Image 1 (tube, rainbow, N blue to C red):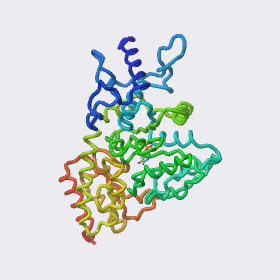
Image 2 (image 1 turned 60 degrees about the horizontal axis):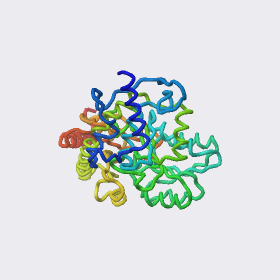
Image 3 (image 1 turned 120 degrees about the vertical axis):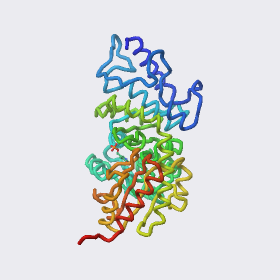
Image 4 (image 1 turned 180 degrees about the vertical axis):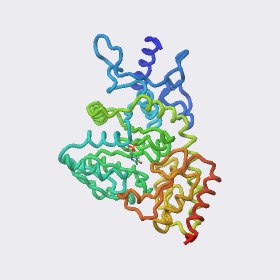
Amino acid sequence: MNDSAADARAQDAGARNDDANGADPTRPGTGDGTRAVRAGLPDPVKYEPTLPGPVFAAHFHLPGEPTGPYTYGRDENPTWTLLENAIGELEAPGRDDVETLVFPSGMGAISAVLFSQLGAGDTVVLPSDGYQVFPLVRAQLEAFGVEVRTAPTGGDAQLEVLDGARLLWIETPSNPGLDVCDIRRLAEEAHARGILVAVDNTLATPLGQRPLELGADFAVASGTKQLTGHGDVLLGYVTGARGEAMDAVRRWRKIVGVIPGPMEAWLAHRSLSTLQMRVDRQAATALTLARALKERPEVSGLRYPGLPDDPSHAVASRQMRRFGCVVSFTLPGREHAERFLESLRLVDEATSFGGVRSSAERRGRWGGDAVPAGFIRLSVGAEDPEDLVADVLRALDEAGRPVSGS
Ligand SMILES: *Cc1c(COP(=O)(O)O)cnc(C)c1O
């Protein structure tokens, strides 16, 4: 590409990052599918691809005064800009006062918020049933002099320990227990006490839930899961209103150097175009599978927020637009659960979730989560629903048969 084309593209990306997060009246269409396929695309340039390829650059031509948008590769990259615009359009459609920052992993994004907003003497409220790395995060925060309080997600129990905190961290639906809390209620109570609110939106994806519209200050997520959905990229992001808090997150990214590669950023953007198809298909199959599991006598503790009689359903229906692709349940003991996982043919035995290929694991194998030995987290993929349900039911039959041959 010649310099003027690159320049036009950079200018365009910079301009869109500055003033248009989906509010562009020349881009009609407000449905989730339309938004997902067009999110973050630059205005068409003759002979340029629709989604420009990854820009591999450690530095950019920069004669004279060193002003942006693109100076040095640790600060900004045009491929990030397009992806940040795209995620911003999905997390906060129509808002032009919001910005998104991408990170090389969900933990990169989470740490950037926690460590840029909190200092010695501050208090943070974390979920006690959140992502499994939180105990390590807690130890690091405490080592830096931050007081950490925890409470469970269900029943909005974090409200009880809010007083005097600086930041409230919410994870809803929680991973892996799938409890849900009322984001709007927690955010109102927190803001009344001058407390910032961050929501981990990994499991829901921005098509399932928009934390900023529910009052949160930050929507934070791992893009490694359903957002990108193919199990081949690690990514994270933070979305929030422009201002001091997001400036601090940006400064953290710059000084820690926690930046995604252009190739990963581009792959993620490419994957966003199918987000609506994937989340709709996977959520519909997850509900079908949950209904089938409900009929099985060996299954207990079944959770899926989309099931009408799930304890989370009432709150989830008020704040979620789709209920996600993760179903959790408990089988009678560790061996039973292991036989089930070995018998599956269409479901990979693997950690993580949200991919187009179904996966499942016995969560207790990691230690850390407070779950029964037979607890299974199953992530529903994009297979044909009949095939997947048949495979799961067949594996349950096999796992339930008395062990033979001895
Ligand atoms: C996976 C996950 C993370 C961490 O994301 P990485 O991309 O693995 O760093 C954070 N929160 C939740 C809810 C997750 O599932």
